Length: 313
Image 1 (spheres, rainbow, N blue to C red):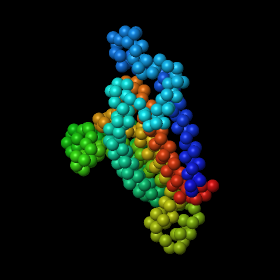
Image 2 (image 1 turned 90 degrees about the vertical axis):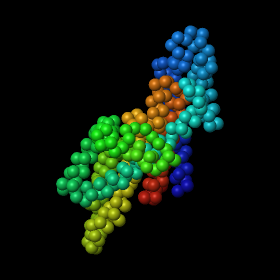
Image 3 (image 1 turned 45 degrees about the vertical axis):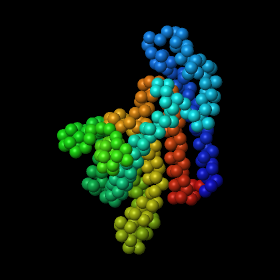
């Protein structure tokens, strides 16, 4: 196991380096001038030159990259070009809402989707199976922002049960915290419930046709025990894979959901930084998201090796 994990960690390093190079290059070579945004529309050419020198944009792009990489290795992800605050501080302030929304979404998705997928596989071809699959198709096809607006209209505007938007930290009270997460969690989890349920159904159906399932039934084992102890356990690898992929996909979904529900998280920070061409924030966030992807893949590989030791070799 240690050797397996070490190989995975070493393989992640070139990926992160390539991501850093590509992100830095694309942002610098794309159209637009952050110095012009910072200096204002009425800035003179001399003022623009002064701003570019202060930002280091007058140096060759290779020198800019190595200077940025050196600071990054020392834990300095830069300073926002617009607010003048450290990027690490901005990310730290916005990390909590995104983490809370992501955790609540994936927990709800797994708790709902896995039982639904098992039931659909158990009732293959029957009305329950067709209903679960029909709901899954709808849930995966409708965009998150449309589901969000419908939920706001029904539960916030018509019924008045929940607040329309915003975020409150857990320190202000659990119910106040949970109230503002219910609607965005429901909206964001819909697609992941649909995706995970379909994969669970397919994986369990494939396993249910194996010889050891027929043997277990022939020994008199109940259907519930067959499903839980044998079918689900042997279908765990693809199920773990899709759950890990869903966690990684949350990054994109969080951006849209936070915008719909006005949640001050990393998704909103991404949009604000892109609109303002705030290079340090964009670079830091993309590297953070890439690191999260790598860590998720590492955890999935670890679970693979636990569920099926043959994968280690």
